[in-house]
Image (cartoon, rainbow, N blue to C red; front, side, top):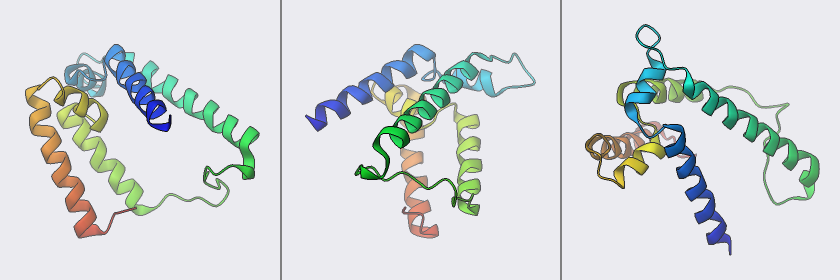
Length: 138
């Protein structure tokens, strides 16, 4: 039953990516190009994702609390680490250059899009490099 929920959640996520245009690198690059023909439509996609996450986290904290087996972070003691900032910068550069992030890249790999055929192997090399060289395996 758990695998079915995971499969349905992944399918829903993938469908949302396709419907929103997040799987089209040209649309993503248009969103990130502030000095050209800027396409602000992905702001709504990201905004709705943040709102959905915030509501889900609120629900989990309020109704599950400490009695749950779900491990929620303690927001009062969390801090921004240097490696989080560096990783975010690297992710942003890759997203801006390629127009892909991991989810849409895998979705485009399934239809053999040429950009994804280059991006996904390089993404895996980068992940391997980050784990082995910098010890980023958490």
